[in-house]
Image (cartoon, rainbow, N blue to C red; front, side, top):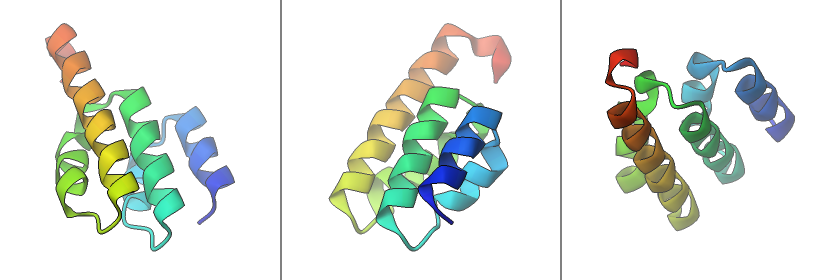
Length: 83
């Protein structure tokens, strides 16, 4: 997978594809996928981002996942009916 594919998935709001990208071997792909999921704010990403923010071996990816998770959770609190 490459960054162009991640950005295309973000544009298409392809949550399933972005969730798969969180497991990519490249840290830049995982980070971009986490950021993208935070921007999309889909509840399906909550658990995966919650795990990634603690489990990824790369600090940059963990930080991106933590920010994305925080954004996602805050957005769900504002719009609880979308969960």
